Amino acid sequence: MDPSPPPSSSNPDLGWSHVGFGLTFVALNAVLSHVLQLHIGTSLVIGALRCVVQLTLVATVLQRVFAAESIWAVAGIALLLNTLGTFETVVIKADRKCRHMFSAVLVAMLAGTIPISILGARFAMDVVPFWTPEQYIPVVGMLCGNAIVGVSVALSYILKELDENRDKTETLLAFGASRFEACRPLAVEALRLSLMPTINQMRADVQQAARLQMIIMFMIAASSGLSSIITTMFVLSVCVDSEHRIRKDRIRIEVRRYALRRTRSEVMRVISGTTASWAAWARVVVGRKGKGGNRGIESEESERAPLLN
Image (cartoon, rainbow, N blue to C red; front, side):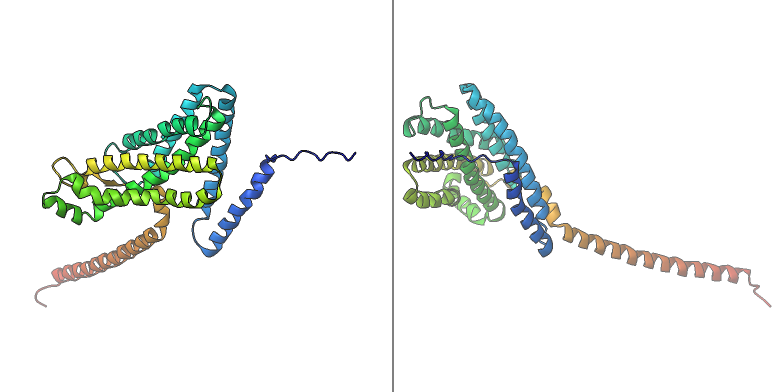
């Protein structure tokens, strides 16, 4: 009899050498950035190292959660994912902010991901119990990731329109429209932009993927849409008050740290211009002092000179 072939492993054993080989692609991009002077090589390397550290820590935590099989541990991971997603949306990605934005986005994320993930895992995916770590945590992670994209796009569009292009909204308010009527076009466009990536993914995946992928995509669409709607309504209610006025004072623009690196050349140009101005000013001052000194010497000599020879 022929020996039976060895069983094929669907999950290859990957070591740090494989991770290092993967990092070579990032290193290649960093080298190209240095050659082309794109000034993004450092960001690529830092991002790659941060990814390695974060995923290593996440893998360690998830391994213990999977082994514990506790609903409270799963709930803690779900809360942590939503909190980190809120932090990324509000602190890292948002250029403009308004009052109580962090708490509003956190509530929207929780309201959009937790109920849909529970119902989807239990009834659509038929997972018993629904909080089974191997099934529930990846679903919550995918819902949070897509909710971050949708909420970020909606927030960015609304706050930018109310800050820079508020003439149309103020015109509607001036003609007697309520804040909900005046802000309806902004909300519609913001939600359309926020859901467009998810809709495009559904078009591609529903035709090719299996039923499980379809269910997950439907859950992602519902979660992202619900989170975006809640966040959009809250931001509009804060930035347009009950007196139907756009409150620009409630919108503040944040300067990101990495923006300073992008404007390094402009800063150096300003510094060089300032240095040249100081040099010119110093030459003028020195010239004036020289002339003043000569005039002082001449006046002193004239005082010493006799009036009559």
